[in-house]
Figure 1 (spheres, one colour):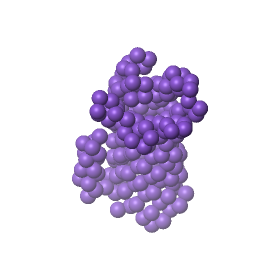
Figure 2 (tube, helix red, strand yellow):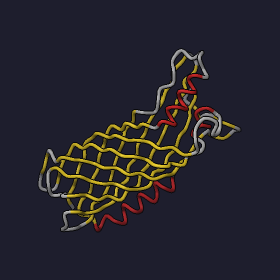
Figure 3 (tube, one colour):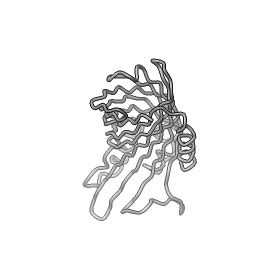
Figure 4 (tube, one colour):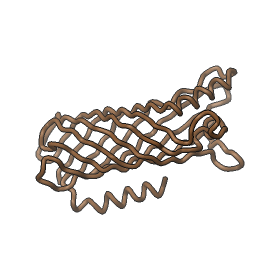
Length: 220
């Protein structure tokens, strides 16, 4: 995960001199990942003694930064990186269990009609994931090692934005994004949640995404 973050930073820094626009965004992120839902539902089923059930990994927050390159064409391109965090909690007397899911995307971006107030954007890239467990505020250990699951896969999505506020070099645009993560290979997700290995779920997963947020654009 650290290597991916470093590669993203180096790529963004290296392309700064060629960019015509810097973008940043924050958004609410909804994820529908059936295999994660199934694993947590099984976790709850196997523990009927819990007063409060473990919540699903569906609600999260996202941050996005990107560069759009110089071009006079209607269809321009760029790169973006996004980070999303999701939390699942089961709070019971003397026992607090949490699952933390981190997603990082590195995307190639195609933007249509960037000069118009309403525009569309297609994104295609790589997704990495990290699923971790904490019990009573401490990392959950298995054989003296932290329980974790790392994954990698691909993603495809579409963003629609409207420039509600335009200044000479600054723009604010509410947006909606819909996307799909495909064949994210994360073979230890089940092990982190249920301490079993590919007993109920596969070694890879797919997920649907919906993000709604606010985009800031700075012309350079």
